[in-house]
Length: 294
Image 1 (cartoon, rainbow, N blue to C red):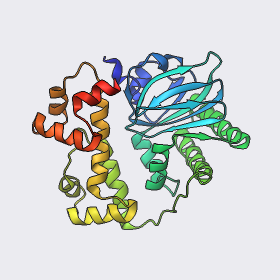
Image 2 (cartoon, helix red, strand yellow):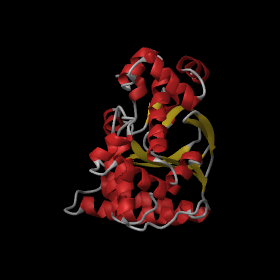
Image 3 (spheres, one colour):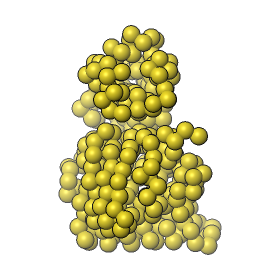
Image 4 (cartoon, rainbow, N blue to C red):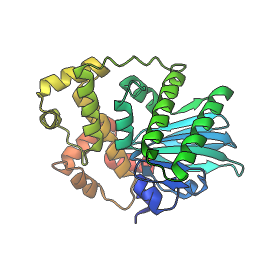
């Protein structure tokens, strides 16, 4: 197995015995020392990491972040984790949720999975918590972990989901210290926008046509574009390009893949078109971007 694929999904976490507990919905990780040796990893899960002791540095989407005691790291799917360093006394608590499971949880209520929150956490994934917030996180963590690893019960999955839903509301309140999160309107447009994001994030290789996603959602491209603009302030094309560019950046960091291989895998019509697309969105050619960022 290629090392760049490690930790991408909960299945890989389980296969690598990286977690102290892991099923198809949730995983708990308390030892990140092995992460120092990882090549770039593209996540396909939501990860919340709380540092209780020690210091670490980690590259996320090419940017370096320092993490110390009481810092919480929030990672959405499709981000790229790279090389990291950790002090010997580092102590972490981490919860990983599969993409599908997170979608189920956020569909149950207004728990902060808005475009505003996603954009803020993409730019500022490390949040400094208060002592009270750290205590609350640890209380939820210990309780949910004990329910997951304890004696199986008839309603174990439902109980864990309820506890996680409560934690998401706590997190929504916490996030309001850092960014204004507009409450959900539960409108048809907002529900359709969430479906669009779910479809876009789960599609690989990603199509670059608004019409493709509109057809999957049984709406017109014009209506999809108006929904995106109304809900996020961005056009559907702009949002699609953000996701496509993430895939390109990840692939360009795979040293064993040629530019031609990447072009073919991401279904660009030819190398010339791929080069123009990369230059437009990353400001340089694929080869130059790879050399600058490897």
